[in-house]
Length: 95
Image (cartoon, rainbow, N blue to C red):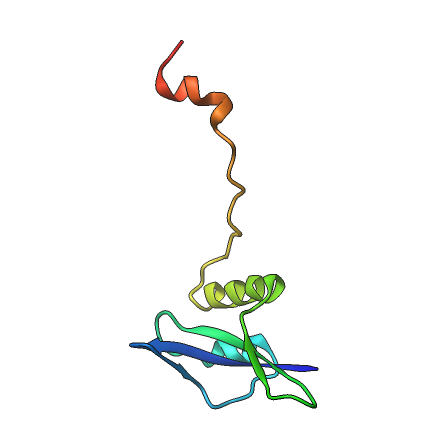
């Protein structure tokens, strides 16, 4: 199974994509030309039609790194959220 990527954005309820079959995420990201642009992965199978899919976790991280670096911003992965219940009394002002 081979995977290729295309740059995409939405207009109304339509998915508009570039007509390229990019072999890498980096080349697909370079093709993103509008705010809210994204990259879609396509799995090409020998016996079946190609199937579009969302980026997996690794691809998503690479996509974000590439997109942010285009604008000179260093991407920082989101922080883990902490469970604040043990400190609830401190936040509410209770003693």
